[in-house]
Length: 412
Ligand code: PMP
Image 1 (cartoon, rainbow, N blue to C red):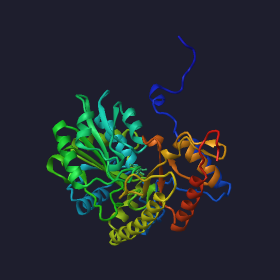
Image 2 (image 1 turned 180 degrees about the vertical axis):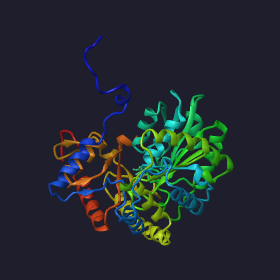
Image 3 (image 1 turned 120 degrees about the horizontal axis):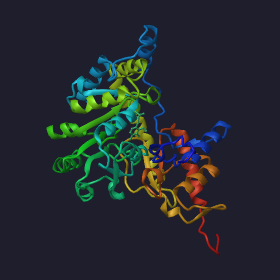
Image 4 (image 1 turned 45 degrees about the vertical axis):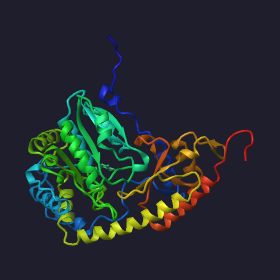
């Protein structure tokens, strides 16, 4: 028997360290040392948290709302979520079919933990949010990646779902609007997917965290609102992080059939308990604020302006292509494959990660390499920075891509 004591078990070994850790570290170091870095990798909006949320949190502290809450979340918050979902998305989830978690991330994790048996397969459209494959694996499942066509915004189709489904396929994880592509599924596209899910008897985990960030003429449709069958087979996940600029407050939620919510609540009771009482009151303050909807519309219009600026500018860059126009979230996925194999100064750009590293080193602009999103040859560019900074970042990107040179004996 080995006397060597291993502190890390098998489950930890299946989750690799972040593929972008060194880029992130360099980005932070450069920023901390006072360099003029333009960070276009961000996953959060740059607006302040809704004032009504902050006021509710202050009041919660002052009035002693500082104890454990019910594991599934306070009754007032679950009622507010139920009413919000009904008013905004046309779904009717009673408060008893809602569980509040520490961010949408924990809600997604608990949903997969509650649902999967070892070896169950989960269809995962690519490009995907970085955490999905690891969540599925940690929950004992196997991710089967489904990739749509770039020109169609990478959106998956019923045909692609059918082609990848096997007898072991239990679920489909559908993120709409999509991180990292910014694609938004139309109602007709979702209806076709819902029919396929019914035929194959798949549970649909619908991550709708960017629901409030959809730009006209595109519109958002909640998967569960499509039909009674869709309502039964969907676990709807959402939260306040992206909607109300509350990423640090850690409040997300899931709404689903009662047995799923019961199982998720049991798992949460032994891992995290209910989320922070103060954050829950803050989320309640945001969801019930009389001017929340008008403020969201103002913020959406502001982001839409930046979206247009970025799409137009990227299309004008040498060797960069935007294969489709994103209509949601706050990302543009840019195809930089034409830059690969070329060099910038002494660096040969071999992949999207090297592209991002060289761009950061030479122009102090951060973008997210697509490799960890299942999008080789692409970079994700966020537009959640002030307009002037976005324009400056684009100018620097232009300088960078204009300076790329072919390799070989006839170096130009
Ligand atoms: N889903 C997607 C697609 C996301 O992009 C994120 C955040 N980056 C989350 C879920 C998690 O959000 P939260 O902050 O509520 O945990």
